[in-house]
Length: 592
Image (tube, rainbow, N blue to C red; front, top):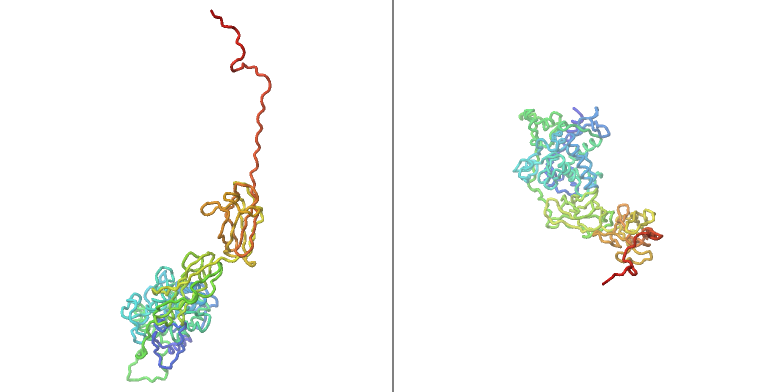
């Protein structure tokens, strides 16, 4: 018998199925899984605590991740293409919304392995949805928690009791809180590996966990299934996958095998496989018997009872819930309260100082752990969270608080609102009024030394450009005022001298509210020379320093030479004179 099989059987003997929300262990029996990282309520675990206890092979894959299967790589290091893509996509998404968690996709792969055997070897369609339902045991109180139907059978097909569903095994009531849209199709489907992987990632990062820390990593896994044996199994696969994986086609992954929880052995079956094996589920007790494993609690020296017929399949031993220990009721959020000042401000191009934190409480004022709070930037602003998103979803910790990722002010001045709302509720959100202020600037420097000269009636050929700095560093979004005046410092009358045009097309001598860009640079609008020649000044004033004076010269156009008149002709005219002759006419008129 293989070493892996012996290890798997030994692990199975350590594992006891337990109901989320009900501690089925005898008093004083601590399996080490009591820490529910981030204070997640025991009735809010994703699944039903049943899982596949198969351990990874002792032979690890190649140290570096492979895209194609190397000849000597164990088959167990192969992960179906779509399933692997979903895990990696979930890691990228969570790193943007909760960068402090440090979620590794290999952890999702490890949990996906023990929960469903990587969606039963990658039996998913091109969109990542399972080809047939993956269901956990009926949660009717027989060996597991009693959870009456919460989804009208939409996900699990059971209108009486709930069952864990999908490749990451979410109970419908838990999915209602943690469900996510990992593939961007506008739906939240627990049977879709992209949606389920993102939801599992956000669940594991609940509160302020940092999965790079051993304590937080253990707490996260235990919050998924409060069992030390489950933790050890997941961590074994996590280490195995970290040593390298290779991608295999969908449907060609290693199918789930090895022992599972007793109730799960009855209910999480592949009907097609059952028919092929004459109704014997080889993934359950049959495998355990063939590998020489024992049922939980069995010993090698248990005597055979000759009066009792033997059966190839041992009868499952199911724990019985303690009647005196009721399932705790749900913790219902009633209020989301802003912590800290209602008004926050930051200089453009910087981060807002101090965290944006809210607390979610019940009607009685008790903290609500595990609540999903969505922080949203609303308004005309360039402010963004973390990696450049307007929305970030954070899960409350044990004290009911959730803190948004760092908020970057952006380069757009003005006010906006940040809202924090509890996902899945109609509670009034908590709000912050935020203001982005201009950066201070103490020095302005012109980027060009070219003299500024123009002729009346034209525009200056060079646009004025300056750089603003504050204590030697570029001043982003610094406010600058530009004013035109005569060279002697006197103000210009309307219609006199150079001018700018405002948004309405009017001639103005003064511009206010000019702001520098990302590198602290400012390029002024086009400058017109006007109709009067002479010497002028452009005065540029920063918010916190001395003005910069730029000399302007406006020249009159050169005078056009006037042509000389043509000279009068000389000499005596020989033509016949015109006009009336003078003198005494000759001849006398005779009469008589």
